[in-house]
Length: 153
Image (cartoon, rainbow, N blue to C red; front, side, top):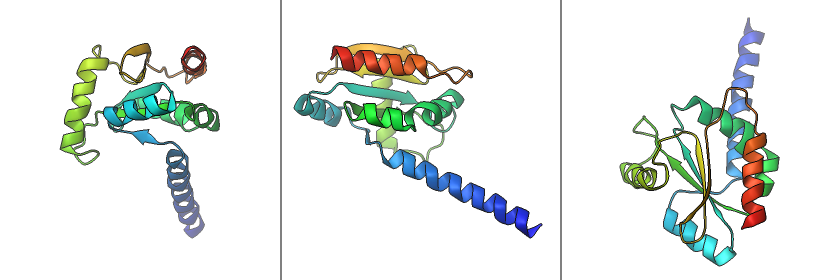
């Protein structure tokens, strides 16, 4: 019984540690003005990611299957990443950040789809959009979306 408890605790600790490692490799900004400034300086498109981090199951799956991969990490070097989180819990982001995010939802995610990816130029003009993620957990269309943005920017 002690061995089972130890194995279970080790598995949970390993999972948490590996998730922290994966997330730390990506620089997700939360301020659109900062993202536009960097985009302008570095001549990179902005990838805006609308998520409900604590309630949206497809968002969580997309994070695991797509964003937390080495393949995406490599492509992310050519983009400015901007996360727009609309969590239900009040302890996930500040009230001020949530208000800023709601403003971005009204402007760039009018249909309210989650997850939703919106590509922008340095001025904040929409280049392309891709909404949703299915339980089939296939990321091919997401990589095609990213590749299309990078090829045409």
